Image 1: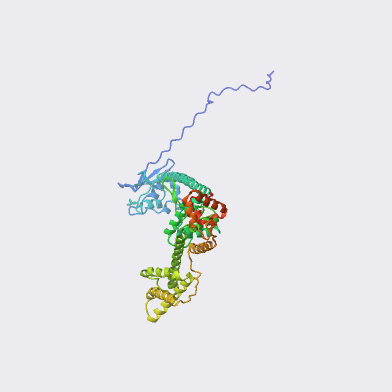
Image 2: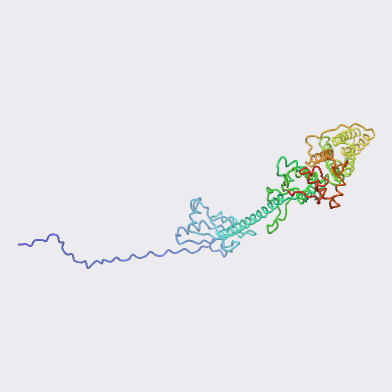
Length: 498
């Protein structure tokens, strides 16, 4: 009876002695051999190009690179680009596996051969024949990147230094403006009234008072076409500096950076008056009161005479500009000759003593017209007419004085401009004349108009007499400066500080 097979059990397998259960390692691929460098043209003692290949370069790549980079000894290239590959792609394809160097063209920084990325690049570096260029220096990309990095670093440092210098200058300017503002709040009007106020300073200050009614910040001098007083900047700048020194004006905080002068250590040295905006140190009313007190104090006749002469100087300058414009613009004549200018100004000053400014304008108009007619009758040159104007003006002034002729007043044309100090000086002169007429008689010394010399003598004598004058001034209160300008400038008088 045959044996039954057991269920659920698989027959035992015998191990295969002919097959190993270990797998053998596959052999490693051979290492890629990097093609050696190639010098072009081949066989010459001094090659013009050297090609260096990467390990990935195949024999076909080496052949294409040699054909592409092989130069023609007479200049240019041995084969056209189209024979090597697609002209727009071949240079980029070869650039991945090949680097071309120019052995005779070294970097100006590191002295290594320059690398060319294409034929056009090589021609731009070495010329069409790849020969060494004279007086031409190039740098390799690595050196250019290093130089750019250095320049960027220097620019960063310079920017930081500039920012630090700007910060230091702003701090200096802020301290300067704060000092100016503090000086304004602690202004002692006695110091200002005891200072010197010339006629030029008074005219410019009067113009500033008028301008401050429109805008508190006074414009820089270079924003005023003819300056505050004179078209030339030297005299105006001196006046501005003196007004600042005597605390009539101060530098406004809106002054631009170019208006301030700094030294090498960024310390504030000063300012440029031509570029600097100013403002009155005190209010316009207080400034005007102090100015009146000085001009109407002791020796007022001398001060008023100087003020009148200064106004005549500005009027003479205005008349000179009007006559020059009349001769050149209307008659197309040359200006008054230089050798006649001094005589012309002499006639202006003498004429303004007897006639008004408008009457002098009439004299000038008539003198120019008469000279033009005389020139046409005599068939003379234009220069003769310009020179004759001075002589004709002198004759007309002498005739008018001798015959006591009535001279009308002519207005200047609208195109004629004058510095603001001229109109302000005229207005100041009128105001002072009105103040002199309105001044009350001294109550301490009857029948004596102000300024009272007896009061000044008692004040200088000291003692009880001086105390009487001080008490009298104190009783006048706020109107003391207007009513007693003869005492307002005296240090013996006790005045409030503003």
